[in-house]
Image (cartoon, rainbow, N blue to C red):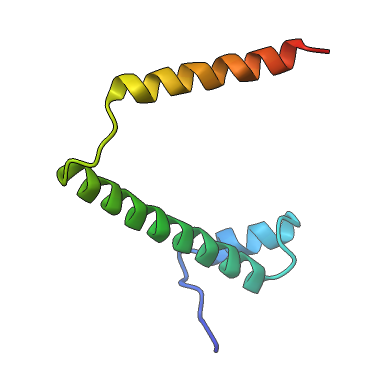
Amino acid sequence: MSVEIPIDFAPFVQRMVAERRFLTESDVLAEALRLLQARESLRHEVRLGFEQLDSGLGIPAEDVYGRAENRIQEIQNEGSVG
């Protein structure tokens, strides 16, 4: 497959290669596609989450915050042991 980089993006892609952030222009485009794929996956997961909330499958905020606070405390305790 051959792809032409839009002229607006060409300087950016060239700079990424020149700065050795990527080896080739194809590597820049592959990373862009990975990021797009991740964004679309996240969009799908968020949509599913809202559908679950709309269906009454949510978790009470108090439970979520309580679990988060407990996990933060665990992490802090792990950091202070040593």
